Image 1 (cartoon, rainbow, N blue to C red):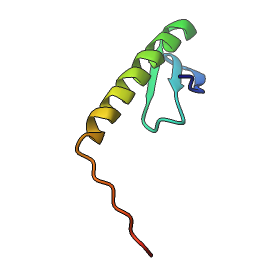
Image 2 (cartoon, one colour; image 1 turned 135 degrees about the horizontal axis):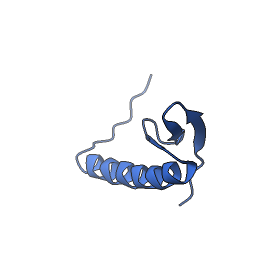
Image 3 (cartoon, one colour; image 1 turned 90 degrees about the horizontal axis):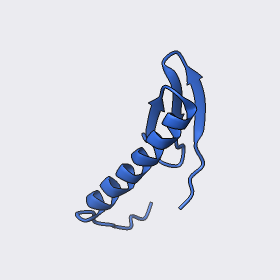
Image 4 (cartoon, rainbow, N blue to C red; image 1 turned 90 degrees about the vertical axis):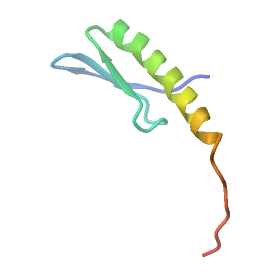
Length: 63
């Protein structure tokens, strides 16, 4: 899958995040390191999301 990411230079190097995955962010000293790190963060985010779904119950509520 492909995800759009945002990257911004920071005091520590580069901050990087995926707006489509709330809370999924990382950083790196270089842009290349930040890109490698966000790929790992996205993979771990998606794995955790799948694990949490195992006990999830979906209910429709009418308002």
